[in-house]
Image (cartoon, rainbow, N blue to C red):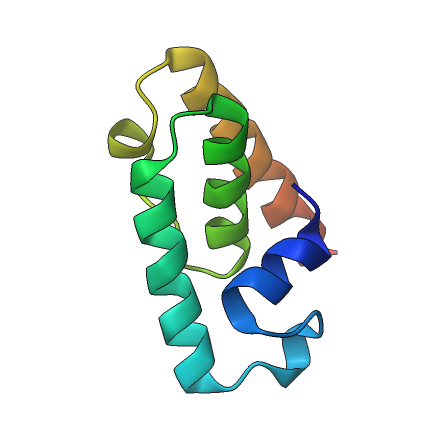
Length: 86
């Protein structure tokens, strides 16, 4: 999943600063629906990661059945949080 493709798909632009609040809310809701329907573990993780970066991620225990996926998500969260601190 390419980041720009996902922004275009869910928000109608590849420029995150150009997303209007209404488009942000609608795009996030669309992503949450797609996340719930997605069966591919990699695609589910990518959707979850984008939701996390947008500040609206899902609970790990509900989002991922596999412990390995939950651990990967925790690692991702720590990495992003450290990057934001710098």
